[in-house]
Length: 444
Image (cartoon, rainbow, N blue to C red):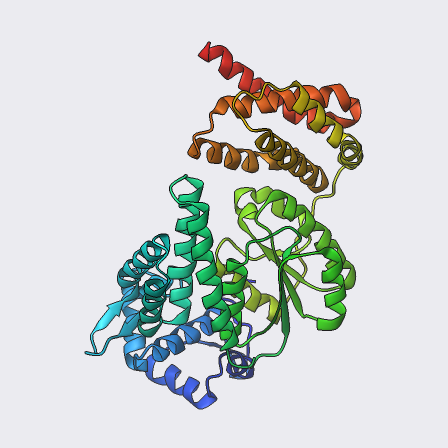
């Protein structure tokens, strides 16, 4: 639905925002915000953007601005050709002297200080920085701009080999503890409808889920959180108890996206709308056409806005691409041969200085990803996963030679054991290995 289409009547807007009708009419009359359309009978009709505008104004009031100053800020941003709704970086707060603080300029310093405290294992300082941040800025800003972006930078540091696993785990634990305390302090829901949030089986990333749930609760929605790594059977059992109006599932990896696809089919059968998100859907956009549900967007802000729309009008999700009979047969055949392929690869490969445990783990991960790509109906989905793995090896100074030898050995084992029934897999492995062999010829 176009966010500028007049759709909601006055009653719906009042229920959604919590603003009183008299106040809403006064804002329209004095400040020209929002600017609703009128029906033929003279009744107001508001768009989703009008509702978002009201929430933005209310948020600025909660930060300490008067409504007149909030409207002035809105107009100022518009005059500078900026959309006030497009980024949290332009929200304002007031300090003790009454002077304005631009969040986008100040919050970066808080984030960097918090990251430094986490990398130094200084829990007390990290907590103090967050306490100052929450005192100065709205909760949403601290969660998105300090916690989410901060933990993402730390994770990128681990990926690049600059941050240790212990540092990443220490920071994640601090974030989870803080988010859980914020969630426990949220007021009761004021909007009708229940949202169930969960991570798919084997999906261990929880921070994005917790922030997402917190943002929804602060907007008045009732949420039920099942946690990370939820087995399919547990989701089915929970549906009958929770009876949600919307289920939100997350997946960051290809194999967990395949599990999400299975869960999506169950939800479709039960007539429960699904919203989904996660890193893998940004890396491989074609994957979205394989999931029977509504993609929520690449950011948490987009996801929350999309949930608002779905709770008002779920609509019909986009049609999914069917999995071909060839892929279905290949997946079953590969399932019966994958253990033997890994064993033959382990025997045939010259490991050099690589530890057997590393080789075994690489084989298990590749096999798991191939299973997922076959289930989802497109071996091309492997591209994003392979690029991520190669980058990780580079950053940890593991030579390309290891990955190349591994892929060649895996291909040879697959050719020996799969035959024609494994053709989609063999075609993909041949394409990868042809590039490797061509590169080796050039290097020689």
